[in-house]
Length: 296
Image 1: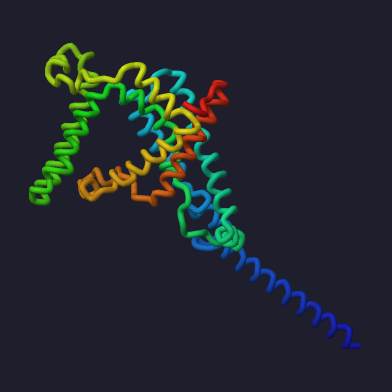
Image 2: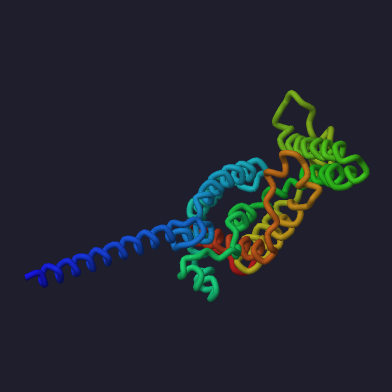
């Protein structure tokens, strides 16, 4: 009479044990998936594929870059600005597709991602990828060459040469003064002629305010930078030079300025990211305008 009840109790106990094991397994799986260092969710959120910080960088970098581009004259027309803004709106999703593709095409990284871990290596950089959108307009900014020559001459002397012969504190102060003075000279030489209350820049600065490239030279440079054949190469090389220049110790030890400087990345990451970003931007231009140049 008791045998059936004993059998039922054993089955109930077995089912209860299975249920408990499934709960523990599910708990361990969720704990692993939402772990900061492992799991597929971490692989998505923990910077190897996407990170919320990318959106912060995208917004802040966009405000700074577009403000700077407009101030220095790298955007000549409202239509050009609209195209660049549209490309910048597509920047993050396109970059993420490229980043995911690069990791999935790499055999070792693909195995890590599929196992739920994040490759601890940077193959592409959003910072340098975004360079292609505005660097293609630099010839427009460089047409007024004099202010650039004056500003960079002050930077060269006040940041890289004179501080070598001064004590550390005095040298850092000199660097700050040179940066401020160079920026003031650039703004005065570029926009001083529209302010009637101050002397004309040409009468004060001479060639610094008057030296300019011809329209033909500027147009030729624009064609070279905005062609699919030479543009990505030139922007990639420009990215490498900025990567080395902006991360030199002469700049990184300046108070406050150091926080605005990028970190030094491998040249391969910089060049490939900048070149790919340039191709992306030129493709957007070709699709929106129906015109594109392969050979300058």
